[in-house]
Image (cartoon, rainbow, N blue to C red; front, side, top):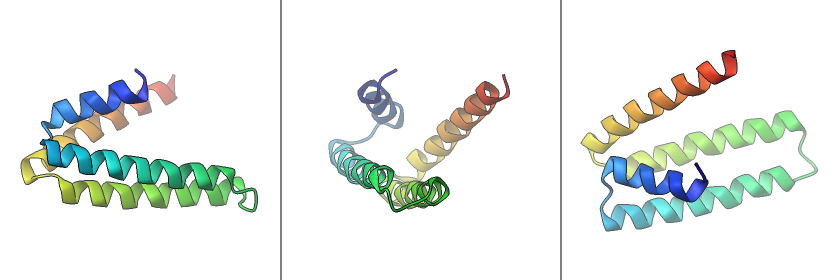
Amino acid sequence: MDHAAWMKKFKEDLKLTDEQSQKFDALSKDYSEKIDAIGKDATLSADDQKTKKMDLKKEKEAKLLEILTPEQQAKYKEWKDAMEKKNSNINQQ
């Protein structure tokens, strides 16, 4: 699944309103640009890049949760847990 299809499914699964969808798109674009900049920063070691990217991921998630209703937050947590479990299973193979 490509990124655009993934984002569409994410929005549909969480039933984002138009306003939430716009905020989510802006948030995703902003953090994508920040992550890209870190990846291109030759002054950072691979470990530093990884740490900075993880910090940004946590920051983005906190801002995402501010956009969501409590019901959507619960659904997001279920979705995230399922994705982590799926990724864990893939990594174990």
